[in-house]
Length: 245
Image 1 (cartoon, helix red, strand yellow):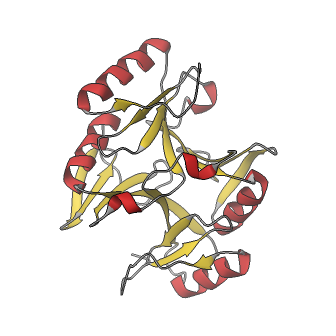
Image 2 (cartoon, one colour):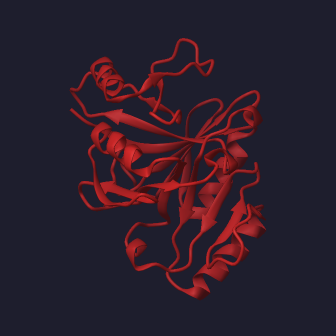
């Protein structure tokens, strides 16, 4: 039994506008499964596939009240590409953000609804990830988080230290999932959380029980009667276990 990391979920005031920003930013397309939801996926993509972690943008009444510790890092292939991408993102509505990063080779931006993300300088490790280099979760204990998430999903541990841990799909494709030790994890908050999906034939309830045994706890975010299950990982980061499709 295992789960697949299939998408990051953005809470938004306007799912259509924010979805269009991220589609234009990544060179992806948009679709919708219903009112208030915009799906952002690569062209010709068959969901789910670890070659990409997709974006699901959902309109909620008060997105500013939601604080998660997850953000995206975007990949670039050269210094010129990084400069061009930053300028293009600004034209799309992104704004520079100062989180006390100082003089670093990456650029910190905020999307039109204030969600922070980074445009990385070229790094060889991200040369084959696609537009999204990594999904980053700020945390207090990368080792413990990596242990939980590597047991929760079918992603494998690529690197782990006291300050940083990196996982990737067992197929060796798509973006990484990284846990970064941060003195104050809540200082880099946005409205992005992870969604995981059981494999066909696996039971959602059994997977949820397994996650609880690993240290997950039930989370009430006002979701009401929905087909997914909201949980929190050992550091309190909320995530959703989707129903098999």
